[in-house]
Image (tube, rainbow, N blue to C red; front, side, top):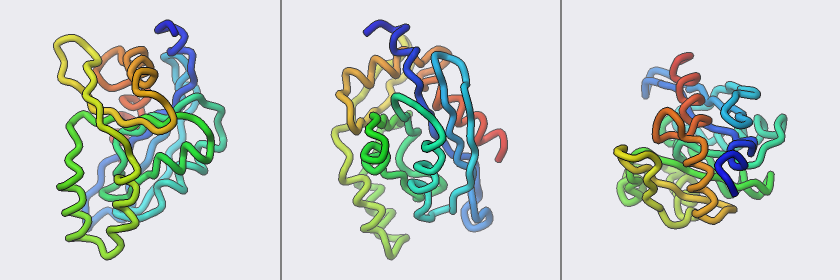
Length: 185
């Protein structure tokens, strides 16, 4: 597939806004639908800081759109309110790509969950279901990003990420969702 073919795939980027742990009870979750390099639609919802409602809220948001893939800016939002990419994939049958600007440290995540949450096992299951973490160079002379996929081969995900990364190593749907969520927080 050519770069322009990937750019014509409708893609949803998902990121959270800022919050202060112990002070802010809810954080913003922004979902932005892109077609090509243009914003088609955006939806903002609130999720509970360290809650368990992020997957359900994202699924509800996605039902309003037709899309070809979802790109998540990580798995944990609003602290440790995790989005389960396998549930999103099973619900819509569309690939879910998880992208991080720093290499995920799942051992540290598990320790943090065990120390701070009685229900840590519910949250940890999401991390256990994920596959290999792939180091991906998106732009020349920029640090890599780290990518996991559900429902798509890594080669396809890398081509999509590169096609949508114009101004930074983050694909435009993620970059824009982050700007909106943080700007409104």
